[in-house]
Image 1: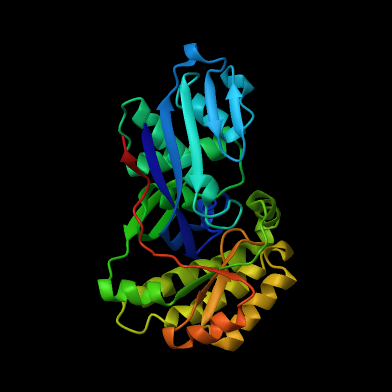
Image 2 (image 1 turned 90 degrees about the vertical axis):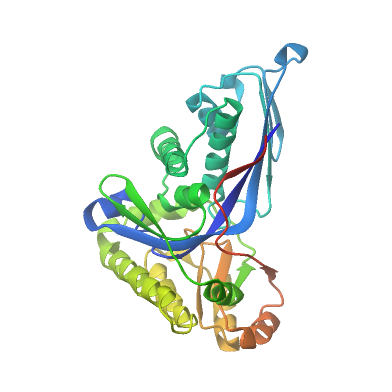
Length: 326
């Protein structure tokens, strides 16, 4: 049995500029981190001659399929097809956090499954190749409205500045900071579940439909990536990122009305009044997790203000998709 562990991610700056529709003309960049919350795949050979099915997939439900075409879960079916696996396979899925919550879980699913199937076939796959395979499946095969950052963070892990150019080129720049600075950044982050979930594609389609009118906003968000990178690799207080996160959130809200909601605005306003320096809703918007940057000295007040919401503790700079057992 092969077990693959693939991280979820927190996108700090630049989300939206990782779509080819934008970066092919203007360039794009994101600053973010893989986190120590994961999706797990177990992949194993199924001796189908002993059963009345050829493929078994366990997720929210259990599929026992007699052939590839009978698989109901479309991404699972098409990734099997892409990897040349048509029968005699069993896959079980588990996740530390819920789907549709702004942490890139759909791409972590794709990345982890491709890695697991390649391992089952005895084939090694590098991090960037793995990311490119997932991007191809999601955008070209499944025709999903997704950017490129989620696949990169899932495959490569790390705290990174990722630049995008051309028709789909990307460059991963590891952000080299001291362990103390990494710890200070991590200790200033609070992650809260809004209680709302949504399908990112619906929000992203709305944004892309307004791409021409959103170009100036996306360019402003792109400029914030460079500012945040300078702060992060500098010697000043990492709390300075809070003001930039706040500016990023104000810009992101301009992209479409579906990005925020009254419940989200209320959570953010309470956090800011209690002492947060800034924050943003993760992922496309509309629900999921809210990231806040809060100095440790003010975190008790923020936690009290958000006592009705669930906090999830995270660790940043997690490794990319990894076979943890084979």
